[in-house]
Image 1 (cartoon, rainbow, N blue to C red):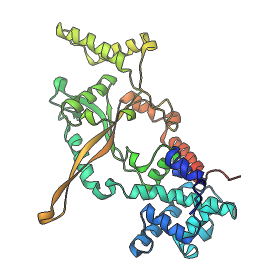
Image 2 (cartoon, one colour):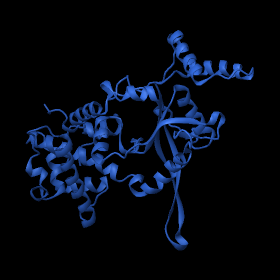
Image 3 (cartoon, one colour):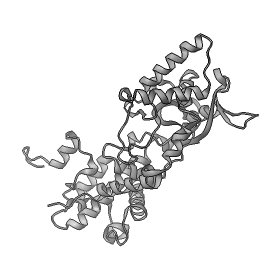
Length: 369
């Protein structure tokens, strides 16, 4: 027990200073027993074979992920840390991560491995891992069922029974699931992220024929109760497609014309929106959430909604319903914007490269003085 006046700066900054544990420079584990108790408080009692095996599995995944996705050519993880046989006990990895004065280079590698293990543990122990099929079905199936193929044109239409015949889509895409490596790198690249706030593991993208149709898609999703806007996570919404204030001005004018029996064509709506944006650009109010990896050129409507998922658990008399909210991302953009987004500095490969660079920076940290 330390003196009541001795405080660990790393711990204090992590608990009440707003510094992610991933960004702490070293652990403060004194010995093997201290390391064992640290692991127990973390969630793994390594005296229990099952839980010990979980720790070793996580270690193995972290080593593989680093070798496949994070190391530069010529970099090699020290064998005494990468080889479970030579490491002997998980506790020894924590001890190595604490000995920055005795062996700073080994300590740096030990911390790097633990950072990747930490993110992997959180990813592997979320609700999606346990209820993947139920989550997918309850979130995605209603959206897919609302889209039908037009018998004449062959186009896919969202809500064919809505006024105007629904929204014709250029594309509807289910977001592919992130691999573990991709998710780990994303979390490592964003200091504010932890697994509990990885909100885009599940999602979809609507690509419409026009900007107007993109906003019409939002209207349809809400009015047909395919999502409830009360469950939107406000600070995750993004609108760089078209400013809401100018869009609503145009819609009010078009509604007045419609009441007088003048129904604009799709091309007239497109031209009116484009002209208003040009003439009133100084009044345009976008909602742009900064993303250092995709850059300001990426244009879209994006929001994170939550769905209350219901899963039966238990058997017989013990059977009951388990309910929880799960987030999913929706992206909406018009076809012209979609094509532009595929090119230039926000292209997928460059996006991933920038993300990997930031993840490496956090994993390996800085050398201690």
